[in-house]
Image (cartoon, rainbow, N blue to C red; front, side, top):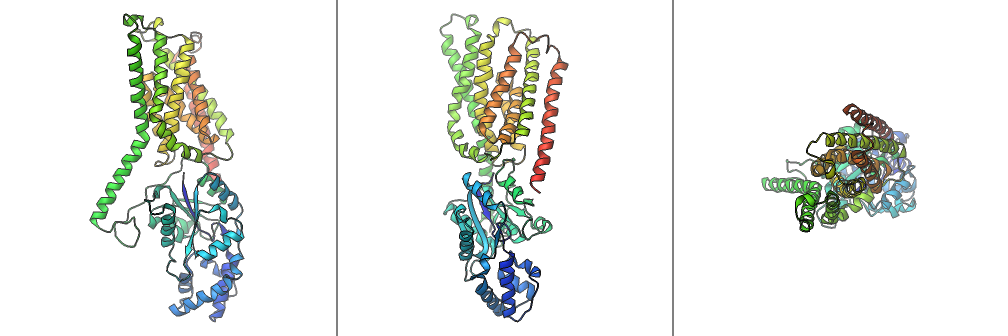
Length: 511
């Protein structure tokens, strides 16, 4: 999910063809060049004026400067308002601001014109920063404009490049973003072709405003590849290595960030696991002082202390949860996708029955376990069906998954969270089952748009799994391994189908 979003203006937010091409046509006529067809002037939309005059008409420096002057004669008066905002853009900008994104315009057009255009069309309020070229020509390269936008955004602090994205319709936007070291999204509804954007190296390409919305607002696990490091030392990009010392410093910085990302993802789980273990054994030791021997220690108390230890351990990572609370809020979607969430929840319940049956069979074949060691069903439901699931979801879905989503892409954050949950919760004896249920609960939350759906679906399914595992009335129904495999298989097939159709829908949205 991108926190800082930079938009190009012409061809990305608005269709400026009439204003730009007519003003360019006017400038050419003043220079003695006749160009009656403004459609042939579409290539001037996007690049700096100086480049357009030079490349298209092979003009000298003096004629170029005169042409720019003529162009601005008409454009500054009427041309800048011969413009149309693309349908859906105002709504997209409004929703981005509702999600507390930092939004900016980075345009090759002079800043004064950009400000007037945004005000004229009533969308200036949605932008935190507006940065364009300078009228004296000292800042007309797109790379310089993007760097200035980032400088203003972070006010001298170290920019978080991995959370910045540039959205544009021409290769100039994409190439500049690549040189700066940020992600780029190319839009083909403007004046650049898909081929142009692909050759320029766009991270992602969309064909419609709705497709752009799906990347900027709807949580899809989309993340950014690490920006490449330029080892040539050319240019003024602050992220380029200009000497061996710079390269060494940048390598250390990358290593430091990699460690920080890994610890940010796995650290809370480790603290939770250590804390819950320490609290459980500590409480068990203290309460054990009231019993003469180990045989007298009630299994009911063991179960309650086990669940209580997990809940109290959440206090060790409460600060981590607060740090991702805003990120969780940012993942909220406007329209919950119920048609995928409902079958996923059904698959989760089926899987819960299957995993509960599996653990019941495993428990029954354990000759060292006697019936007196098992707490009453009600206590098991409270401890293993509510207390442990609530704590686990708080840590793994509430913290680890969202932390992983900041530096991993696709479904990898979910997979890593499942693996981490399975490893850390192995002490419950049902770690794998909880981890698989956790993965589906994360999927449901992404489709429904709120963390509470992850918590609710996970606790309900964990409750069902515990009920099946410890109930004494299900032996006749789930008494063989094939029955268990059928339940797990059905759940797996449902989730595969849900993911296939979900993927197809997202592909359609991005076109």
